[in-house]
Image 1 (cartoon, rainbow over the protein chains, first blue to last red):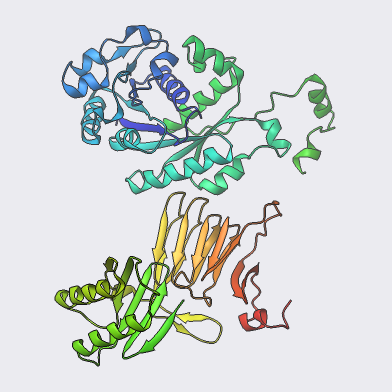
Image 2 (image 1 turned 90 degrees about the vertical axis):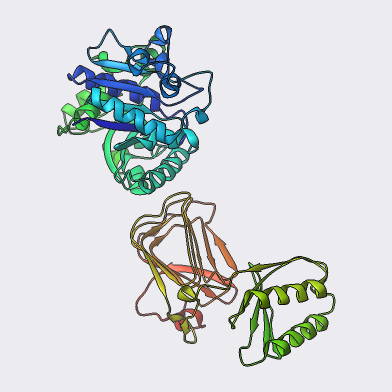
Length: 272
Length: 225
């Protein structure tokens, strides 16, 4: 049973593209046939993050306009079995396609793939409407900041109004030490406002920047904490029961030693 | 709010324009005469300003509406826009006692109201969920929210100071009742996580924990602190 999943956020720069790339790669690594669709026409990025930019010949708009066949526009990622990219057009605008055309395209892709992941553009205008038109399921990304959460809330409202009843949430770039100091919204604070199911939490991780710049998804790096988090999210999408990770990476040797002896260094701030 | 009653005609200024209530026991011609007289009495008050007018109290034929529209335009020497009369099914008929709205039509919303969404209703509104930041709930009567209010709530939107807002916790950015506006304090006081009520006392909106024992009149009166 194949599924079209749209990854959206409202606010820009919270990690939609990175998340799409990583979840898609993780799903492919688990043996699924996956296509990543970049719906951000005019501001495409997914090809860059995947390191496939130089292989684009045809794009999504070409397919919709009948310039080429779907198969010609799909780029196979040679590093991962079963992973494909359908790039966006860079020289066109969001209005180049309609929600009806996107719906039809999604139906076509569903016949060939287990998972169709759509990287939604920021905003709630035409590009957003196009991206959600053919989706069966929605994932909302936010970072633990008031403005991003506000936008996520707006998007959840629009998703439910458009028949995507139960969107799931990914909290990206969580800094556990800042949460502990009370300087950042916690997972609970965020869930309290948004009130939807939590699909996963991705810790703030420098290795993401490196892997994004290199065009290598972090899930392929077993050392990356964020990569692990994305792997877990992919497994949850597949229906597996994976508990949330513990993010206590910032603890040095001394604090681990203290914890070993039962002298917690965190207990004070935890209960502050 | 301006309210005057004479010759079967009363004027009521609302936020959305001028409501002209027409008695239905008079002939149309005498109503027209009365209306002309009233506008002349008002002198320069309405002169030269475009008006949004809503007729209430009497069913009018389209032809009669345009006659009245022309008449007003003639008198005030400015364009008039006619607003449809209020829908009967949602007409703001509230039963009130000295302190409170105690009965009236109500709308139930069975989900959380999120940023960018707006629920407006002439009667009372009951939200079974939260009102999130960036969302708006506007009721002609009372607002009751089962969860938290974090957005904007306006009760008694037609200027009814008897309206109240009740929620699991009122953490709203702004609370409006009738013509009054209260906004959240700039310093982030620790929010109260127990049911709260917002009501008007004099010219102030009071928000406080809801105590079963204290009636609104006691709250409003001197005795209550």
